Length: 219
Picture (cartoon, rainbow, N blue to C red):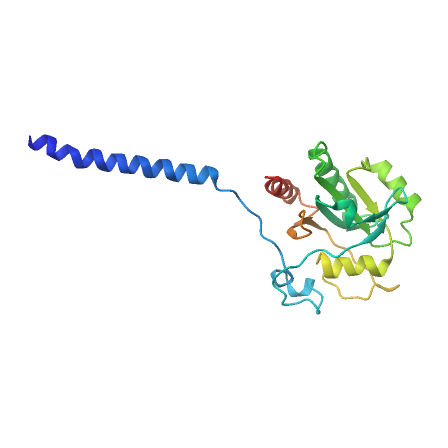
């Protein structure tokens, strides 16, 4: 009789532990990983235009008007309900840009069959990167037009986007003739035009992280 009384609490404890274990495992498997939403206050202040420093909510990428490799006008409408990666480059760049473009090709291939994922490259030397130059560059690199717009446009507009929307560069400037930006950053933008990640476009590990984060947004 004493043996039976002694076993009952042990059985109850085991049962409780089993239930708790199942709950913990279930919670772990069903909890979704989420990405932060970046606002100006989340960045190094050196990356943020002075007019936006300290803002901690509701930042979205500004509307844009650019011209792509086919001479087509590209606006936010072309990226409506899309997740996309943005970078700033120029076709004559001999250093980081070829590496960045090759890594964007990897992303293009990874999400080739997913219409929700697109790419957007903006030239920081738009006068030199005319439509024919961009077309030649796109053909050489294997750019798929339906996935990736390589663009030129008004220099002040592009530089303002870099500094006030995507927070891609440290240097201050006015987008004038002598102004020049050069950045390795890739910026991940979600379907609500919010920034969800910043990555070194020359680093293989960062590209893997970017691909993983895109999949998180898709989920």
